[in-house]
Image (cartoon, rainbow, N blue to C red; front, side):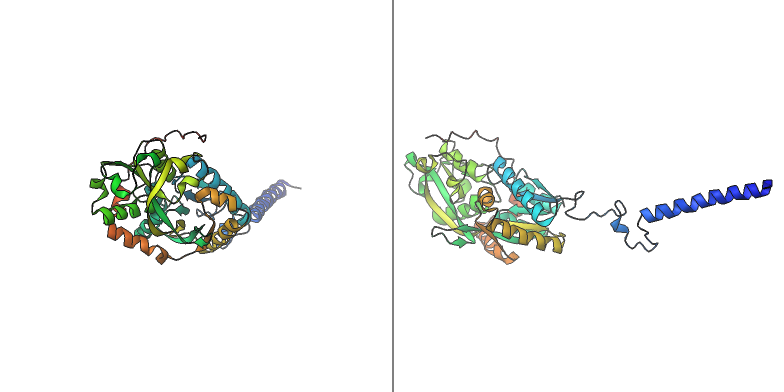
Length: 341
């Protein structure tokens, strides 16, 4: 072999290795064409990640209406069961307030949210999402109902027997955008006393949760409070709270709380989750749903299900968006009293 043939052979060798390398890279990349077909099947080939994947979990937020530790535990149990049933990945969050939760949905930071009725109307008014499910709770006759009531609590030993007895007293609401913890009780005060709560009561606070409002009455921090009916029977409440506090009035009916999805949430994923949630609360997750928000089931609803909340807000003269914008941070949690009598 002469020098020229040696050089040619060497060039062919290098060319062969280069071609082999190109073929290997092409095979590993799935053989994508210049048209881009199939590019999203390759990890890192697309900036858009599949909703519900490991790298893009579904953010599921639960309203902080009750004991945060219990809501977190029950929310995580629900998310874990949904992941098993659907093959989707979830991440649970508990916002700091009702308003913060809606803002997180509108900002694209939350995909699906378990929220209160008045929150639902704010979400709809902002155009950030829509309801998919409403909770079901058993009424006094044990029948599943789509509505519930607000209640006014006082200490049994206070001697207060009706709403008029709370005039000039300290009162606890739950949150400025809580239907049973603010809207309907405010409307009740206006209808029965002819006064605005701000002038009827000597002072008011927002406790930050229904359980906290009830405990504020129980511990003597306030003279009365508005909560949903009946928060006192929830897990973790003092054993003697039913005897040391009493209900003196009620307001309602109020459309139940429920679950909403963000505006751009994929319809196919929504359908899968809706079906899984209904099945979960009806069977294997009964105890968890009960512990979470006292849910006895879930049913599909449309946006107009929450129209009565809008009507009540107009009658009460409450600017829901305005109240949400100035929502104060809830006070530091008060140590829960012992369960012993």
